[in-house]
Length: 206
Image (tube, rainbow, N blue to C red):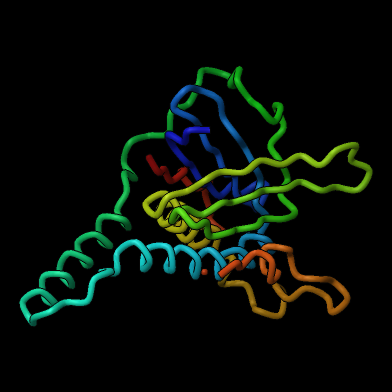
């Protein structure tokens, strides 16, 4: 999918996040992100997105003079700032009623596993899986994200977590039982290399 917009909103009644991704040629992907998986995903995405920007923005050639060094640092700073910027004002493009082009079906995926992998071309590959007991087949999709998109998604997730007030809950309530493994999003193979009274308004990334 050639991504056009991303939306992350906290849904108070469900106490979880809805991620929506639409493409420039139509179609929409939808997925629920639970508190446990969201809080496990954030450190991974924080680290990989920062490494992605550093790799792109850092000057490659060693400066031969102080003026060249200053110029390269300024260029890197400006490039990093542009990579972190995004359009958060344009409303998400909603289709009237239920979207007709839903590749994964009308029901959003209930995410149980997320993998984030830095690619050699400077992009991040995010794989999202729904693996439920009794499910005939695993539902999943993946998206490729450049630096502006991955950092924009990170910003939207931070805003949604802040709105959810999940981090205000005592830490002991967020710890999984000892016999329960952490979500696969924190597993080593993901590293080839943070209660609203009213429903929160969605945040958008274009």
